[in-house]
Amino acid sequence: MQNEIKDVVVIGGGVVGTAILRKLSLYNLSIALIEKQPDVCEGASKANSGIIHTGFDAPPNSLEAKCLIRSRDLWPDYTEQLKIPYIPCGAIMVATDEDEKEIIEKKYIPNAKANEVEVEWMDRQEVLEMNPAVTDNVVGALSILGEAICDPFTATRAYAELAVINGAELLLGSGVTKITVTDDGFEIILENGREIKTNYIVNAAGVYSDHISRMIGDDSFTISPRKGQFILTEEEIDISQVILPVPTAKSKGTLISPVVFGGFLLGPTAEDQEDKEDNSTSEEGIEQVLHGCEKLIPGVRDYDSIRQFAGIRAVCSTGDYVIRPSEINKQFIHAAGIRSTGLSASPGIAEEVAEQLELVGLALNKKEDAKLEIPNLFDESEENVGEIICLCRTITRSEITNALEGPVPPTTIDGVKRRTGATLGECQGNCCIPKIIDILDEYKLIDELPLKGLQNSTIALKGGNQ
Image (cartoon, rainbow, N blue to C red; front, top):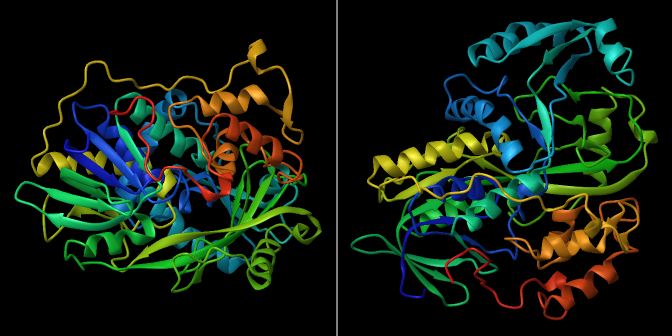
């Protein structure tokens, strides 16, 4: 395996990188994904609103709009094949005065039409009938019928699992330190010293995609980090849809959304910063979320929060997605600058990247035995009846062990959480974390504590090239 030359290596294990890996796994290719964290879904992909956007507000004719439009047709099959929790609840953009109504009428309705998104105007009474918690100041709202919510944890994991089932290799827990351009491709050196040779690279490294780009001398774009802070509550909010504000030039604004695995999400902020690692929350940021959301839902300050968290979005200097061959080497494909719609656009981005690779010479021959569906992680049989590990979410021991025996097993507490829902409840893991540590230890997937990550910095998972 050490001397094998990969056809394609994807750098970055977020929702975009894993979606690309899934797409490439359908072809007769030797492929791998490199992620510096101990699991997939460790960056922005685990800290977002979980909304599947239609692209109604994306700049017409932009690459972002193109990928969102392509994704709309793909999501129904993806959610079924990959067992992704998905609720087509729709969204409304709330106008709280006549000025905001005019912005919707003059900007967002024509924009939606240009992007072929079905929208309609709702009057005040219709809004309050469907969403009684919305402010009495509402004058009406733009209804975006196709908006939905899903579980971004499951989406990212499922992309990776299907790729592994189809023969892809995951290299987790060791980032890229150097890329050397060779006569026929690239040589990649990881933090643990491993060397990987590949004919093509896909750069899907999120906020670090400009850093990876510069490893081959490409400085054609810059990524700046933008923090978004969220509040998660399990209070009952009397809304049935995603509640959106009228956006600003900087951000889509703070919204209120149902969460597929329970509760409601408030946020995010839009805080430009220099540190690409600082995902801390702050009193000022949480206040900003509450201040923005109470304009839409007046009672938000009365809701108890069970968790606050923050994610870092990748803001690109180009103002749009960057999906193209590098100007330095055409066998190096960028999938960068994916700011806040990466989850929504991930199916379309994967299609676009595959086409770009084919245009620069990669042969894409369909794999006859490629799988399109992943097996159920959980079932309703007696195997899932037994000791309850997470009392808040009634997660059983067998549900956790099923995850540990899956194609991409978790090696951290966070990984167990993202696969099973354990620790997501009201106690936030205070009762179940010790039992989860014991189970992880039984499976020999940890060294001293799961919070320290992998025992070995790279592992070839089930279904990969051993």
